[in-house]
Image (cartoon, rainbow, N blue to C red; front, side, top):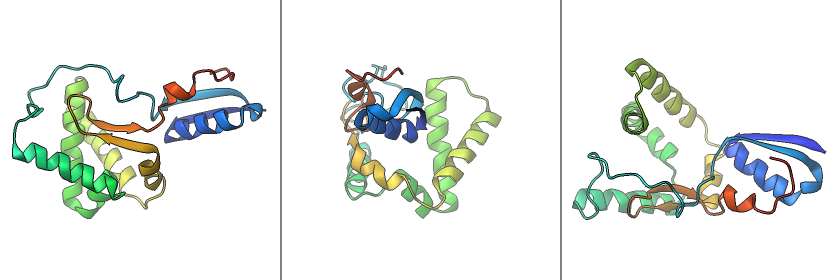
Length: 164
Protein backbone atom coordinates (compact mmCIF):
# COMPACT_ATOMS: atom_id res chain seq x y z
CA UNK A 1 0.00 0.00 0.00
CA UNK A 2 1.16 3.51 -0.76
CA UNK A 3 0.82 7.03 0.52
CA UNK A 4 -0.84 8.97 -2.31
CA UNK A 5 -0.61 12.74 -2.57
CA UNK A 6 -2.16 14.99 -5.20
CA UNK A 7 -2.26 18.72 -5.82
CA UNK A 8 -4.91 20.60 -7.80
CA UNK A 9 -6.10 18.42 -10.70
CA UNK A 10 -3.80 15.66 -9.40
CA UNK A 11 -5.69 15.81 -6.09
CA UNK A 12 -8.94 15.10 -7.87
CA UNK A 13 -7.42 12.23 -9.85
CA UNK A 14 -5.78 10.86 -6.67
CA UNK A 15 -9.19 10.83 -4.98
CA UNK A 16 -10.70 8.93 -7.91
CA UNK A 17 -7.83 6.42 -7.74
CA UNK A 18 -8.16 5.98 -3.97
CA UNK A 19 -11.89 5.48 -4.28
CA UNK A 20 -11.49 2.85 -6.98
CA UNK A 21 -8.49 1.05 -5.44
CA UNK A 22 -8.71 1.58 -1.65
CA UNK A 23 -6.74 -1.63 -1.04
CA UNK A 24 -3.69 0.01 -2.71
CA UNK A 25 -3.73 3.27 -0.72
CA UNK A 26 -2.80 3.54 2.94
CA UNK A 27 -3.13 7.34 3.16
CA UNK A 28 -4.54 10.03 0.85
CA UNK A 29 -3.08 13.54 1.10
CA UNK A 30 -4.86 16.30 -0.82
CA UNK A 31 -3.09 19.63 -1.30
CA UNK A 32 -5.46 22.31 -2.55
CA UNK A 33 -7.36 19.82 -4.71
CA UNK A 34 -9.57 20.82 -7.60
CA UNK A 35 -13.23 19.88 -7.41
CA UNK A 36 -13.89 20.26 -3.70
CA UNK A 37 -17.02 22.42 -3.60
CA UNK A 38 -20.31 21.34 -5.02
CA UNK A 39 -21.75 24.30 -6.93
CA UNK A 40 -24.72 24.25 -4.58
CA UNK A 41 -22.50 24.54 -1.48
CA UNK A 42 -20.20 27.29 -2.73
CA UNK A 43 -19.82 29.98 -0.13
CA UNK A 44 -22.20 32.90 -0.39
CA UNK A 45 -20.58 36.15 -1.33
CA UNK A 46 -22.08 39.59 -1.61
CA UNK A 47 -22.61 41.02 -5.07
CA UNK A 48 -19.52 43.03 -5.91
CA UNK A 49 -19.50 46.34 -7.74
CA UNK A 50 -17.62 44.73 -10.65
CA UNK A 51 -20.27 42.02 -11.04
CA UNK A 52 -23.06 42.80 -13.47
CA UNK A 53 -26.48 42.86 -11.81
CA UNK A 54 -28.38 39.59 -12.50
CA UNK A 55 -30.38 40.87 -15.50
CA UNK A 56 -28.01 43.75 -16.24
CA UNK A 57 -27.15 43.85 -19.85
CA UNK A 58 -27.06 42.17 -23.17
CA UNK A 59 -23.25 42.21 -22.90
CA UNK A 60 -23.26 40.12 -19.70
CA UNK A 61 -25.83 37.70 -21.17
CA UNK A 62 -23.77 37.40 -24.35
CA UNK A 63 -20.61 36.67 -22.35
CA UNK A 64 -22.37 33.91 -20.41
CA UNK A 65 -23.75 32.42 -23.64
CA UNK A 66 -20.33 32.49 -25.36
CA UNK A 67 -18.57 30.95 -22.32
CA UNK A 68 -21.19 28.21 -22.02
CA UNK A 69 -21.12 27.47 -25.77
CA UNK A 70 -17.32 27.27 -25.89
CA UNK A 71 -17.24 24.97 -22.86
CA UNK A 72 -19.87 22.66 -24.37
CA UNK A 73 -17.63 22.38 -27.45
CA UNK A 74 -14.69 21.41 -25.21
CA UNK A 75 -12.91 24.73 -25.76
CA UNK A 76 -11.26 25.68 -22.49
CA UNK A 77 -10.32 29.13 -21.18
CA UNK A 78 -6.68 28.04 -21.61
CA UNK A 79 -7.24 27.52 -25.32
CA UNK A 80 -8.98 30.88 -25.73
CA UNK A 81 -6.08 32.59 -23.97
CA UNK A 82 -3.67 30.94 -26.40
CA UNK A 83 -5.69 32.05 -29.45
CA UNK A 84 -5.33 35.68 -28.43
CA UNK A 85 -1.53 35.53 -28.39
CA UNK A 86 -0.06 38.64 -26.70
CA UNK A 87 -3.57 39.91 -25.98
CA UNK A 88 -4.14 36.67 -24.06
CA UNK A 89 -1.56 37.81 -21.51
CA UNK A 90 -3.43 41.09 -21.03
CA UNK A 91 -6.69 39.17 -20.70
CA UNK A 92 -5.08 36.86 -18.13
CA UNK A 93 -3.68 39.78 -16.10
CA UNK A 94 -7.10 41.41 -16.10
CA UNK A 95 -8.91 38.28 -14.85
CA UNK A 96 -6.24 37.37 -12.29
CA UNK A 97 -6.18 40.98 -11.09
CA UNK A 98 -9.93 41.05 -10.69
CA UNK A 99 -9.98 37.75 -8.79
CA UNK A 100 -7.12 38.66 -6.46
CA UNK A 101 -8.39 42.15 -5.69
CA UNK A 102 -11.74 40.61 -4.76
CA UNK A 103 -10.30 37.91 -2.53
CA UNK A 104 -7.65 39.96 -0.74
CA UNK A 105 -5.01 42.57 -0.84
CA UNK A 106 -2.26 41.71 -3.32
CA UNK A 107 0.61 44.01 -4.21
CA UNK A 108 1.16 44.89 -7.87
CA UNK A 109 4.49 43.04 -8.10
CA UNK A 110 2.89 39.88 -6.69
CA UNK A 111 -0.03 40.28 -9.07
CA UNK A 112 2.34 40.56 -12.04
CA UNK A 113 4.24 37.41 -11.01
CA UNK A 114 1.03 35.46 -10.43
CA UNK A 115 -0.43 36.62 -13.76
CA UNK A 116 2.74 35.63 -15.61
CA UNK A 117 2.71 32.22 -13.94
CA UNK A 118 -0.95 31.59 -14.76
CA UNK A 119 -0.48 32.73 -18.36
CA UNK A 120 2.65 30.71 -19.11
CA UNK A 121 1.51 27.55 -17.34
CA UNK A 122 -1.81 27.62 -19.22
CA UNK A 123 -0.53 28.46 -22.68
CA UNK A 124 1.94 25.58 -22.88
CA UNK A 125 1.15 22.56 -24.99
CA UNK A 126 -2.23 21.18 -23.94
CA UNK A 127 -2.63 18.05 -21.87
CA UNK A 128 -4.83 17.67 -18.81
CA UNK A 129 -7.20 20.51 -19.65
CA UNK A 130 -8.84 18.34 -22.30
CA UNK A 131 -10.09 16.06 -19.54
CA UNK A 132 -11.62 19.00 -17.67
CA UNK A 133 -14.71 18.93 -19.88
CA UNK A 134 -15.43 15.31 -18.99
CA UNK A 135 -15.16 15.94 -15.25
CA UNK A 136 -16.56 19.50 -15.06
CA UNK A 137 -19.75 21.43 -15.51
CA UNK A 138 -20.20 25.16 -16.01
CA UNK A 139 -22.62 27.08 -13.83
CA UNK A 140 -23.31 30.57 -15.19
CA UNK A 141 -26.36 31.53 -13.15
CA UNK A 142 -26.73 33.68 -10.07
CA UNK A 143 -23.86 34.24 -7.67
CA UNK A 144 -22.50 30.69 -7.90
CA UNK A 145 -20.84 31.06 -11.29
CA UNK A 146 -17.84 29.02 -12.28
CA UNK A 147 -16.57 25.62 -13.30
CA UNK A 148 -17.36 22.86 -10.84
CA UNK A 149 -16.71 19.14 -10.60
CA UNK A 150 -19.54 16.94 -11.85
CA UNK A 151 -18.67 14.71 -8.87
CA UNK A 152 -17.22 16.90 -6.11
CA UNK A 153 -14.47 15.48 -3.89
CA UNK A 154 -16.57 16.20 -0.80
CA UNK A 155 -19.08 13.60 -2.05
CA UNK A 156 -16.38 11.04 -2.91
CA UNK A 157 -14.77 11.25 0.53
CA UNK A 158 -17.99 10.26 2.30
CA UNK A 159 -17.59 6.69 3.46
CA UNK A 160 -13.99 6.40 2.24
CA UNK A 161 -12.01 4.30 4.70
CA UNK A 162 -8.58 5.66 3.83
CA UNK A 163 -6.96 8.12 6.26
CA UNK A 164 -6.96 11.59 4.68
